[in-house]
Length: 173
Image (cartoon, rainbow, N blue to C red; front, side, top):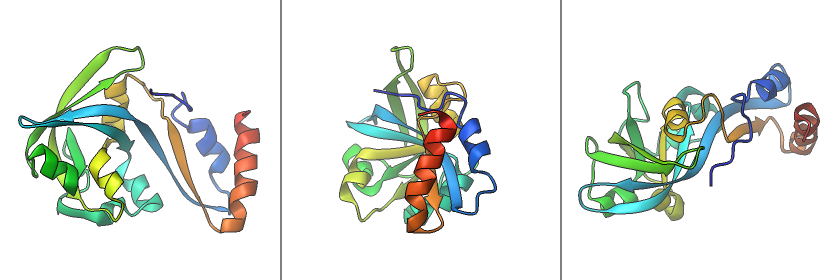
């Protein structure tokens, strides 16, 4: 089930975070469930839409790519885990279809090419999670500018709780 938490694309939260000394980085994401299909197999997956430059500041995802590229400038590229790629019998350049239920409740899907394959120490992530560009996930799910989460990295562990309270107040939650 897709739940939009930040319908404005996180702009209000980002404005509140900009310039704060206790924030190291932040990145907008869309996260929901879907189905990825190849000519030989299919699998239920978590679909995560990311903005590659921002994601590189909040996670090590780019460093896990073992073949292909990390969502480079090419349109309709998907990053899949190595175990999932084996299950689907796909490699870099293979065509897949990603199907989801959009915000209106309609089933929709788009064809993508596997742009990269990643390896993770977390086997569950590698088997069940695919990554696409943020803008493509927003279109696929019919979100407009909406996002489902804003990942915030605090400078220090001690900054996390005060930062959480600040954001809850700033966003009226």
